[in-house]
Length: 516
Image (cartoon, rainbow, N blue to C red; front, top):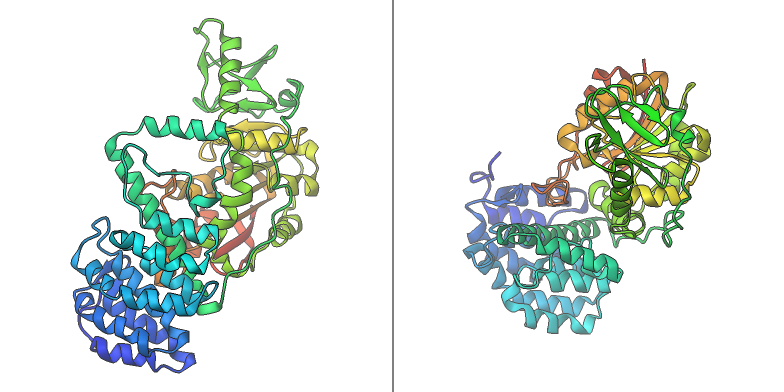
């Protein structure tokens, strides 16, 4: 779909919007937007329309100035990564108006958020903008997003990574900062450039999504912290090999899908002639080590322990800071409709395992593993995830629950192993392979067992969807992809499951499916 180049004159659409009755305000705004912009691209009428949009900020009511500021921000970034294109320059011509309006509006207002999103696109005016907003005494997240949005790339000291949803929230330890610096030193110039541009787009998208929600619904609310999101728990005690030998008949080698065997304190695949390490209650089935390697048991365990020591605070940080921000972006949870208690109650109410162990798939740092354990009992629970920092935190929270490092696309267990599977807030982490992940759940789930999951749908509002898609996480360097409900329904049916419950506000999808 291209941006509309024919139809009503922009002046007519602008008048319709600025004079709209409240009931038709959103519809008239989207008619105006669709004439000038679509999915990040500006139409050929946008450049000539900008002066009228800027002028309308003086005439429009307070309930629609914020809409116009968001639209101007979308047009200002449509040429990015170019920052001196004609469209950005045309929007920049209104900077006096934007800063004056900011000063008169004050902080903690929906219009303020929209104007901050807008002015963050003009790095050439960085000092002037920062001086103008200083009297507002912005919150650290808002201030740091604005500062980074107005920054220029310094290849000698690139400010990339560790900054979403705002640079101010990344209060890392000295160990984690050094680990991050080592990662940056390994990047090429091209990689630094790409990461810089993606980070910039993400910060704009977060600011824009927050502003767009606020001008329609009011200021975002602060959510209560999820249970157990304080300091990192103490490292879990080692679990005995017997904890894993109880699954000897159903564990599978990820390389050949063959059975594994337990040889003393070692897990090995006789077909592949590889061994898998165990440390701190985590069995790493992601990478086998050839039995031809010298000093194998010591080397395998030492390698796993070294990996477990990397970024030790990341699991806690994810639960405390990153995940709540992600729920706002992906689920439009700015109003706090989905609280930690809402999520916990859904899992507790819906999970109904038949006989057999229970799998928390992509368990992360154990936020929902704890909920599942309370519902079904720790003694029948297993956690699977690829992230070692996350598994380390999960094991600290639930020292009696074993963990397996493995992929949701190749679950290292035999067919029909589990009485229930939970996969919460994870499916979107591998959107290109979501159908395969659901098929894997269907494979390992026993007949009658439940599959509880939460993920996110594309927002039906094109502007909100653009902000969803403008997020470039490490797992999605090409941009975020979510789902439609029709896709999820089809993939579940193809995996032999029927939906027993489907709900969720905003663009959340809470689903319970039953294996036939």
